[in-house]
Amino acid sequence: MDKTRYDVIIIGSGAGGGASAWALAEAGLSVLVLEAGPAYNPYKDYKLASADWEKQVFPEKKPQPETYSFGPMQNLVKKDQHLRSWNHITGLYNPGEQRMGWKYHHVRGVGGSTLHFTGEAHRLTPESMKIHRLAGVSADWPLNYRELEPYYVMAEQVVGVAGPKQNVLRPRSKPYPLPAHPIGYASRKLTQGMSKIGLNWEANSLAVLSRPYNQRPGCNYCNNCNRGCPRKDKGSVDVTFLHQAVNTGRCTIKTESEVLYLQPGPGNRVKGLVYQDKQGKIQQLHCRIVLLCTGAIATPRLLLLSANRYAPEGLANESGRVGQNFMETLAWTSSGLYSESLGSQRGLPSDFICWDFNLPDAIPGVIGGCRFSAATAEANLLGPVNYAKRVVRGWGLKHKQAMRETYGRVLAINAIGESLSHPQSYIALDKTKKDANGRPLARIHTFLDAMAIKRLDFMAAKSREILRASGVKEIFEEYGNYDFFSSTHVFGTCRMGNKAEHSVVDAYCRAHHWKNLFIIDASVFPSSGGGEAPSLTIEALAIRSAQHIRGQAIKKML
Image (tube, rainbow, N blue to C red; front, top):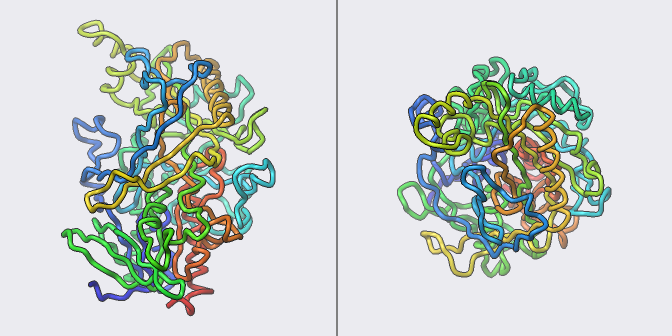
């Protein structure tokens, strides 16, 4: 047994875990972060200068173990064939008649999924946080935008967010710490097309430095944020929050240390946890305060795996809500060819964004909003390998000539939409499949109802309209969530709320019935927002909860 005593143990080192570690260590508490994956060295591990850089989206140092499975998926129907994923060379990506579970895109490592994120740093709108009051769906947040706004400011300062001067939908008390990035040449073709059809756009707010900041360099516009930033200009959690936390001398990070289960005890307290260390040894730790920050799939799994006589239905599951209200990413991407070379392999992913349809009532006849942004980089259409496989037909000399004529001409537009909770979308424990330690996998159950498909239909139609208005005459590939589960952002499985019978945690992310257990990741989101990336909101929640732990509850819990 590890006999070292820490004030706080944090499980997971992504947006929630990293921001919590920073805020608590800065406040004078001793913090241990347990991370199941390895640490990454940006200067050595990101191989953008190597010959095979294009062959993988993110260079995982170790194969990710199997941690989840999929439940049965819904049937695909003929009237929605226009929402199928396809490519002009290979045909339908899913030729079957049922939706397929493909992948939950996340990274196990110090920094979590911020290691491969694009860097979008969005605040939720005030309206998104009260969607039930406005539209009668999902649930309202137990805090409002005004209460969270000061913590958004703190998070933006730590990561170095670059953003526009004006932002009508999200009131600000202070400007972004850095000016917005310029819009790239290829993206300007898309924004011109959007303006032609009456759409508004602005520079996207990004955790990517537009000039040197906090001893980190400004962006060099290589357009490969999703493959890991080898220069540290992208504000991933490892080079921002965790770097500063460790520098306080009060934060320890143990890598490749997977928590197997928590130990609920008497008095509504988590008394300890058991984890497997880097050497494969089983270790036990006493918990004073524990923060669970492993995401909307892994977090409910660990809570359900931690059942014992003090928590017979699973830890923090007194309401039966752990794993319920699962919300996935609802997304659509259309890609086409422009008439001349744009050098679209260069620049910055998602450098602009359109929020015209972001609010819950912004799409006519649809509940739930969406947003639109450039997607050439996130569609992985930056290098010649993917052009050869997905863009240019043929073989031999003609193919080589076509490659030379075509490379750099792709324009892609992406839409991300609201995801609303549904009784058929939830996370449970798999009854048959287990991991290497004999623990049941998380089983993903997901369902797209009629409103989700109407929202996706709007996103697809508007994406095609934007490309046509931008000068694209030939669309060669489209894909979305209608026929695939493919999610980076997932939400809602440990919903926050004021009433314990309807939620898992309170407004400060503390489990209703457990005095020393906090859950700080996207699993606590009552609503997903109309296309906002969640990392900045998670970080703001983490800083707010850490301040609460230090200022109001520390005497009772230590």
